[in-house]
Image (cartoon, rainbow, N blue to C red; front, side, top):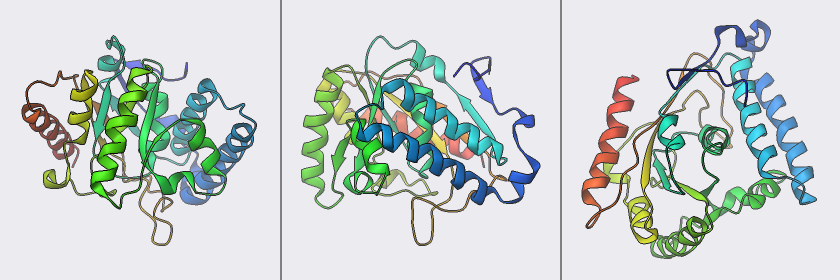
Length: 258
């Protein structure tokens, strides 16, 4: 993480990071590198030897692997994470698999973190050992009422143990942001746990959804990755005002990046 050079609290990919050869076949070179990272992590996780520091380091290695094939990153707003005094709920739009891999190295230096994820992610061969080691909150994406109960109970428990929780309220990954599909489960969790909620806007379609395996689609280095964290909010009343502020933040950022 010492390689993450910030200018005015913003990270921009060094233009020299890309390899001309790798850029010719970005998906091939990236996924071969990613496979090595995940396989090594899985072996360690199976032996209960995959700790927090290694997870964060591997998350950064994913950033470097993407940059190596030409993907550029613009990351802003991490000062809001730095100023936190405890765990929080982090809520954002869900565009691709990229954010699950990359967000740990951006968040963990300031607050320990885990994710609310669909159960199928812990059933992938190899990858499941890594996911289980991170103590995620697992939802089925079948029964919304049951998922809500799980997030409220287990999410609150993670927050009480000092872990921030990342929530993607949309039921599926999509490049189109529809406020109607962005439910208020993150706001409700923050309210119940008595912690702030911090928005994050994500434009990560450089890692596209796959045709056969949705989690692993083509890598497009012509698309820049944008990640922006917003100021934390204290949830008051029924949380409607905070929900609208979060949606407005994400919409504004996505529009500015098009």
